Image 1: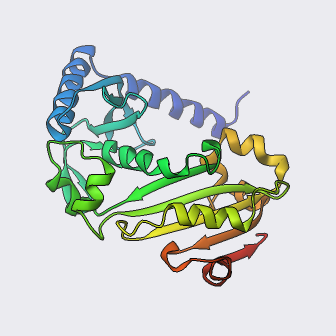
Image 2 (image 1 turned 90 degrees about the vertical axis):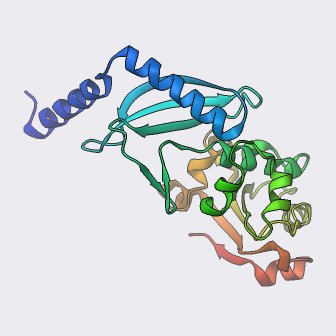
Length: 255
């Protein structure tokens, strides 16, 4: 016989599934068209919207309509687009937003990866772009501006964070390699470029390859279990040599 806690949990899950599935296919089809039109107007290109459904971020949260979309020009860049089912406005960085989506952020973060080609496997690094939405979005409405032009237009507005996983048992994962990454990204069109390099025991290489984001999350327990050494550089423009790398890097030996 199930105890009270288990019974309550099962009921909550079943209720959440029932609430998530509420709504008609006609309503969702209509919303899908609206999402497509919104993305077309915002970025000036056609998108494909799939997997649309009603959902809740967590039990008791407001009902959402959520879908997965991609641009026809960049089909590999899939992103989430969502809105409140009751039509309320989304508050995002001081802006009123009807839909919450991350296309331009995903596009620019992907384009920032190009300088890593040949430096290391894509399985072991990630580049993340950050910018103040209220300064950027109103000025690019109607077009999907690429990162190169955006950096020219918004000087000192766009920053870059680079995350890399290195392994203790590989000779090629040395300080010289960190310096080569720094030199490849020495681009002053960015407001700031930070770099995090985490060294892991080689036994975890396959696991990190499968789930890079989890292992590079410093708040995740697995990060502290598996990391052996870490370098954090707040702004790489200060680093031009191995000596300066040692000087400016915040280094932790084990955690």
